[in-house]
Amino acid sequence: MSQASYITEEGLARLKKELEHLTSVERPAISQQIAEARDKGDLSENAEYDAAKEAQGMLEMKIARLEDIVAKARIIDESKIDTSQVQILNKVKIKNTKNNQQVEYKLVSESESDIKSGKISVETPIARGLLGKKVGDVVDIRVPSGLMSFEIMEISL
Image (cartoon, rainbow, N blue to C red; front, side, top):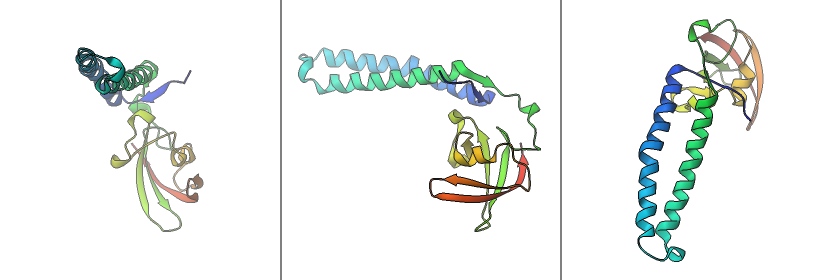
């Protein structure tokens, strides 16, 4: 059994909305597709029926995963977040010490990660390497492409 997942109030609301959509819209739609395919006759050679049953299985797995995340979610009180060291929900500006390129990431839970908007999961190698560090610290982090060195430039909310 997995542990609690720390999440923002906004992230939890988004997950609940997605779960509601899957159970109240997607699930009935797939049930309807299965019923229609079943009405077409011989199920042993009915590709539509097989596809609908497979889609139903995938949907049920997604619903179960979301229900698990929502059940284990613990809302983080953002007013109690400290910026003296890197922790979840901090924005961290880091500089690659080899090419001096600066990047800013917000460390979030796995379910809220979105690299396009600069949100990375605390489960990623970079985030794990940054957790607990302070401004000015230089950290070597093993990533799939090798060892990278980053200097922590700024920690904020």
